[in-house]
Length: 190
Image (tube, rainbow, N blue to C red; front, side, top):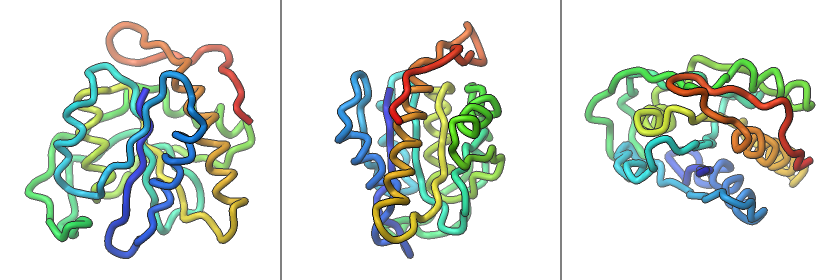
């Protein structure tokens, strides 16, 4: 399994999703590789994601108030500059996660996390990267986190959620072609 976050981009000099990925890495979970991706329209870096791998991508949505599980990646990209100042060349085909996103949201809520399902991942680098990952690894999930408040309490809560979600996704088994099924329960990291 791969867990990712993003580096800085215009308007966000310190991206909390990158910090969150580093904290997941520090937890040294078995079988979990962590990457902090540059916030670039060039998504060729995800081309080395093994086909069929589960990827948990974290990104920040500066206007969000809650954690959002993105059910899909749109085919359109906004003409906004990335961290290097480049703009997208074109969009792509919309892709849906083959994970049971609604069921994951319900489980997260029962576990005490303030999470909602979203079908609006934006049109920035997060969306383009998610679309590229879903092409190779359809049992993947993009999670938009809000900007954490000041202090470590908010980041600690985001980390507790990230560790819980990592365990949940690691326990999911694909059901042949298409969708995956949630197990009855997964280990707790709370």
